[in-house]
Length: 168
Image (tube, rainbow, N blue to C red; front, side, top):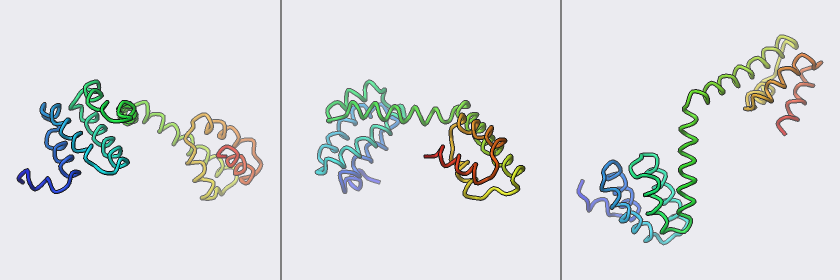
């Protein structure tokens, strides 16, 4: 498509430039054009939203180093903080893909399963509602404590009340 067809709206032009140059060294100079276009947006809230999307996309792609992007983004109110927030979001996403995160998720699932199995063994029936509450707990420490309590409670209702206390 020719360049003119992308210049129908400011937003289209912004994202056209971003997508076109994201993996090219020219992005470092084109970011100024993108930011100039952002400043033309009449709605300041939209400007902030779109700026955050642009910053997050550039950081995630690694097309421009964080410090260099920060230099460009300082021209906007809150730009510095935005870079920090976007960088933390990306780090958290990357962290969730690492092995320890998935190992912990496996331990949590296993603990939830043991609690439900123990209660079923002891009381024959564990309702769907209680099972869902147990599966909503994401703290391994709390799940381990609840597992120990499965041996001490006298009824499913008593355990359900204990889970309600933990959740509130």
